[in-house]
Length: 181
Image 1: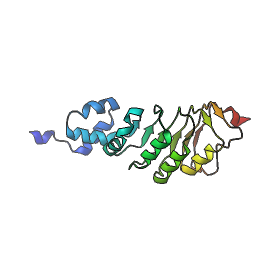
Image 2: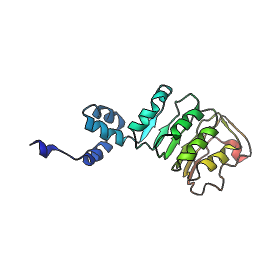
Image 3: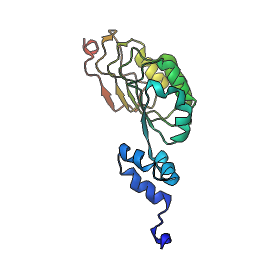
Image 4: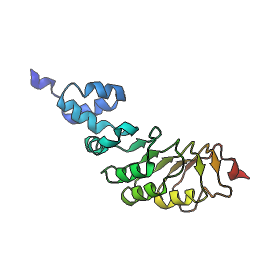
């Protein structure tokens, strides 16, 4: 009778993908099998300051992460991005909104190991320097979506659409009044 109730892991994975993240947490407690499946199904993660010491273990546990949200991380963004660059992830989306400036060194470290980033959100940054779009283009040449909306300060004469981003198809420049002077 129990043999008829068995579903292969790939079937469970399809079922679990339709659940929201809160359901994944509850389901992962049921059994080691479900824990393993839910770990593979998690694609995005928000990183807060208290989680930083546990990141190596988190990245080993959630091997299919493609999206990171660093908007509520208030530590050294360059150091965090360097640590992330050592992980086996293949990031497609990164959100570093609400930070002071573009983390140039962190972006360069990340770019050296992760070539798959297609979406970058840098909204509500305190300052956008004139060289930031060039750094972004050099580090992430395959970007398809870029959001640098609502900076507090922005250097004038900033060229946000360098020719080095041939795949760019969506740009959010809301609140960037100096771009249009």
